[in-house]
Image (cartoon, rainbow, N blue to C red; front, side, top):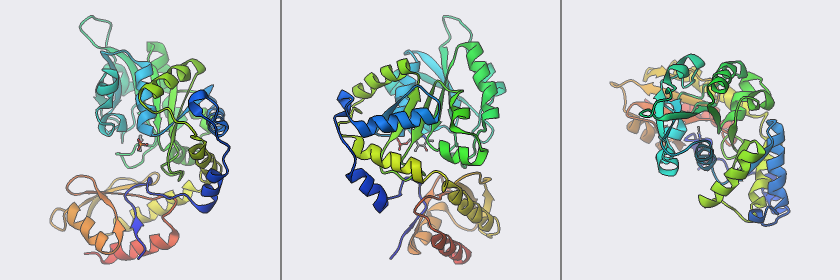
Length: 341
Ligand SMILES: *Cc1c(COP(=O)(O)O)cnc(C)c1O
């Protein structure tokens, strides 16, 4: 029986062509900087975003945590949205790894602005934590995949420049944002001191994220990656999957967004649905009516129909479209949503 898995865009499996690219990759020891395929991937992504250098890491959590570690000193404060991944889903790593605290800002659908950030920057007093870093997320996972365009980021960049703050982007789903905003990677890249890019989300690679920045920054990041236990040896086998994903799976993200829109449209008409967060990219978050069904029961009922989704709090459901969610599966999912209760 075919399972339709809408829990996350991380559930994708490598296709035959990707596997064959992996099997044919030229390999070396990347801790010695001698893996040609990893070097090629790092150069490819750095060039794409107009950055000087890149570092291939096992996960997006690691690229974010390395960036925070390099940009800050213990006792500093960083500013991020209340729903951000770095704060909610990285195991308390901001404090654990860097001894840094976070000041949380309630953004507009997860997006911050210069107006929201400016009053949160601490002045220079001995008794205040030193604000040193601003972190944005694009797209915003917990806010239903909303995204920033480059013209929304420019004023934040200007503020950070004026105040001497570093600006980091958690771009786990940056290509989903770029497909919708029509910005080029370089238009976004110019505004950040560092960027995390995930290969294992919508792009469909099995493992891997890149951290981008200036040469000096990546030199420090490489050292921290080793300390965090993320130095890999023949990583070209994974980098080859990443190169394949970047060259073949970016434009098709539009299909995921259209399928997510189709699900939004149908959910808005369902009698058991209370509200649906506006769908901008590939993430659908909706609330179930309390008197109709609970999140857990809804999850169970769908599982009986071989559809997997994740409940995100008592009445809240998240579905994410991806590379392995086909048109045929969309039709089947709509059919089931129509008859489930
Ligand atoms: C998935 C994700 C990450 C990184 O997750 P890993 O599973 O560690 O690769 C970072 N930020 C956001 C917004 C994400 O959705």
